[in-house]
Image 1 (cartoon, one colour):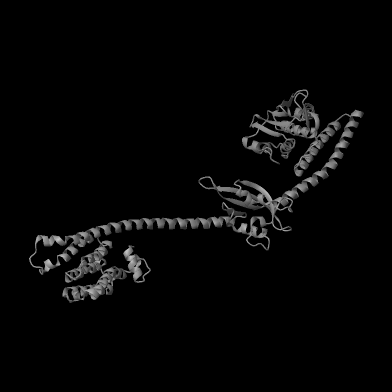
Image 2 (spheres, rainbow, N blue to C red; image 1 turned 180 degrees about the horizontal axis):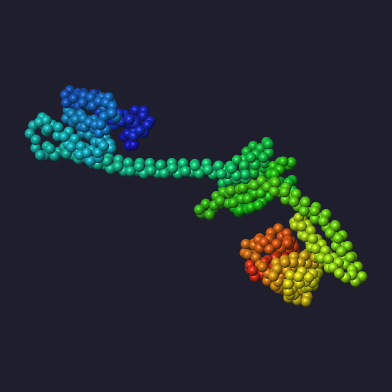
Length: 562
């Protein structure tokens, strides 16, 4: 909408946009500027030049303008043929011609009034070419008005060319207004298209936001989104419930430091810098952080993870924090550990007694020279009792989650020789050759019973997972300040996926389960814990169908060469 239209609408107290008005109102508003200007001219003329009202043609122009304005207001233009309202600016040219020539010699410059109907036609959307033609010829007829009516006497070429400035200026105004209107129309269409795209994008964004809210509210974990200042920007229904549970009852404008968050002992508050939002604001991701939420006596276990958000430039842009209720899982794990520990302790006592009596029976059988199947049966019973005792010990170690060490000077080579002698009977039954590739002496400082436990686990697995025979080689050496030993077999091997999970508790490969090889999957997990408790490590290399090797590196604890 042009400034002239805006000013006119404001003058009449109309707040709507011009293009939103009915056609009848638009024609009245377009006519108003000419009427207002002529009224002001008449007021000035009545004060200073009253004689102009003695001119019949001037008065006729006023009458014509008044009639045209009345018709402009009275007719229902929206019911008529659309371009018919152009009759109003065309009649305005007649009124202006009468006013101009009726006031000749008294009022000068009334020819400028042609700008109003020219502007009106040029701004309209009916026909820009027709508006330009009329904007030239109508003012031309207006300034030639005396010559056409024959009231000015003889007419020369100079008389006709002198007033051509007015129609030429009117034509220039018409062209300028048409170009401006076309440019404004194009800009308006562009803005309208952008508005439509923005509205569509906003609608799609709202739809996706509603879908996301629905998804987040449907899951049973708390989700919190914070901005770069740590201010919460969004949380799902579950997170609001968790936050209400963690808030003190008298909290006003609560902060994260006010929440009931406790460490694993359920009594020590989590330090502020270790709380989830504070950790996220430091710009680093974290996962599987366990804490207890809620006031003492009404706490739930939470597993908390956080992911940092960054903008296109890589700068910190907030974080997403997820709270998972793991109370049931923690309780189940505690109950499982208590059960395993209790059952394992209860099994150790009768097993120790059974093994003691079997040893006595074997000793007596040897002393008396007992023949037949009884001594062999006693050995099988003793071997299975020892296997069952090892299983109980493994369960106890897995349940406790910690490895107690009693380190002292020891010889790794001697431990290897002892473990190989222990495994000879099983290896012979399985058709497996045992090879000792360790040096005669390899001193170190460690827990000999735990190191023997690792070697027994590795040798037992190597023999057990070589069902078709093969070779198991135990090698050992010094590598700087570390003692290294390796158990390698030529058995069934493992796939790459199984290698990644081999140290997990209770893990057994699919091939082993299909082959029906006995075991519970604790040996490798316990071996890893023992190696790490010594400050060392254990690694595995395996190829399916070609064998496996486990390498254990431990701090020697004694200088090289000793």
